[in-house]
Amino acid sequence: MAKATTVREALSKWEEQSGEKANEAKAVKLYGQVPPIEKLDASLSTLSNCEKLSLSTNCIEKISNLNGLKNLKILSLGRNGIKVLTGLEAVGDTLEELWISYNSIEKLKGVQCMKKLKVLYMSNNLVKEWAEFVRLAELPCLVDLVFVGNPLEEKHSVEGNWMEEASKRLPKLKKLDGTPVIKQEEDEGEG
Image (cartoon, rainbow, N blue to C red; front, side, top):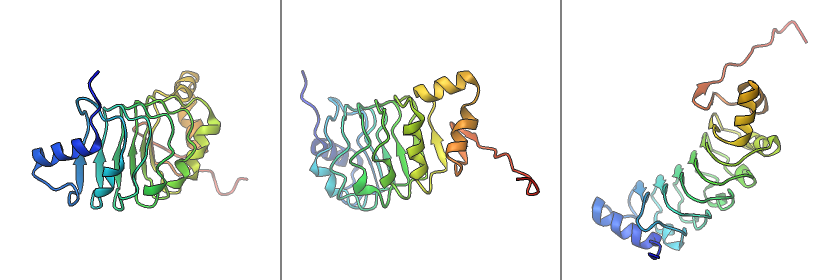
């Protein structure tokens, strides 16, 4: 078996290819490494200026070592083996977009630390219960959610009430699965 690529190796390869210094760069792309990255190690802490970090299409199982990423706004972790959302606390005050589709996330515990998150793309994961989905209501800025391909969405789309049920639970959403959320305005005279 080929040994996994370390973040440190991926960073030095990226520096060579891009001609940029990782510790100065605003956008760092470490996606699709061959062999894949399996672990987020401490060398990520050098990315103090990074605003967009792409780590999709690797074999990362756990979110960790994000402490030094003081300016991170967009984190792309799609197509990995991530099972839980813990480890995001370190970027909870800056992260605005999390792209984490095609993983194995069933529980949304840990999501509430992301106070500025506006966009969450988490299609094709394993969330199957409303009890987990409603944790997203703890995200005060969330306006754009992609949740298609989760068992919960599939079940309710078949029943024809996904948009209605999801937007009822997340009243601040403006976009769900790429579709603008149209709120039924209640007449002020009723109630």
